[in-house]
Length: 184
Image 1: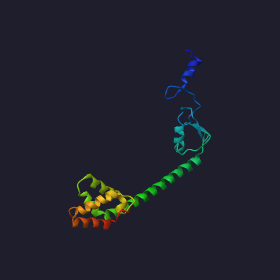
Image 2: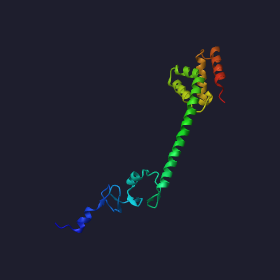
Image 3: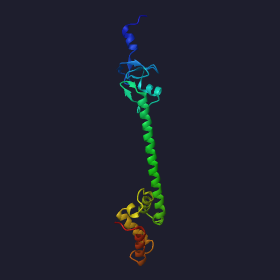
């Protein structure tokens, strides 16, 4: 059987994922595949995925001089990225610790208010109790709550001691403002 040149060309033709003909510019030294985008390392040609495997340097850290991989610059870039990540994680941990400390201080300081709110019916009270417990930066109740929330909680605190407009109620509202300050 005689094979024509056109049949030989068809058998060496490279197709991409869409079935289109692609020109091969070389063969990968690692896997032997025809490659269109050539990268070189130590004088050998590789495809984009194989150069990552051979060098151990991911594509995010690869530094090229033309098509040649600069291994030292790539390693330096990877090391710097890992150092930056470590620094960001350390800063995040410091911030999280500071938030936990504020939340623990608030839990102790506002324990009475949170208990009162959690034992009062309604979604509003439960929501405000959670807002107080989750506060990350502020240690004053009037800074944690909005003006209206602060006044409603003062009224709830007063109502826990007596009917509205009674001496006990007024004393409770005054006690709340003395303990937790006034909205500025």
